[in-house]
Length: 217
Image (cartoon, rainbow, N blue to C red):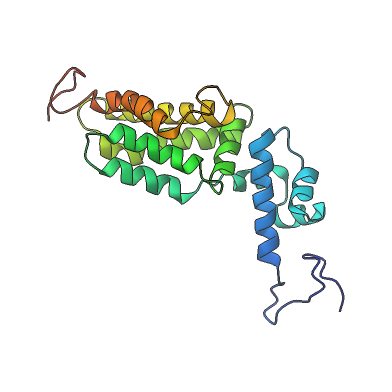
């Protein structure tokens, strides 16, 4: 039997025309791309390196994803778990929501399956338009809609963007820039310290009209 040009398996097509291993090959390329983009960003990554990391011929990368730019956009798709974790943290009692948000955010970044896409987005945001646009969409739109459940009072949109900035900045310095001692600090220690800062923003427009100056509702 002739070797399958797309999978290298030596097997032909199924009756329906789908090549065995095609999905597996596509996933392997995407996983490799996320790992490469996470390590070196868009400019520092080549399709040849992605192919070598995936263990496939470079022609297969072109076949499945076309250009490096289109593969990069696909690699920037963020895990649903991020929104689920932050949504659950936001939905609980207002007291302690700062710590819950930080803990949920860090748990997603600490997940080996989630981190590459997040790293690729943050590392490339300043130099690549698609990554920058995706980060703005996350911080200003998607993340804001998730966080708004934790807030009330004045300036809700501003405060959601401030919390998003806090969370993204934390992950940038801890996981990308590897700023010490933050990078190696115990997770719960970071949650306690940083959670207090996030909680201050949550409480800033509180309905009780406390020190944050928020108007009652």
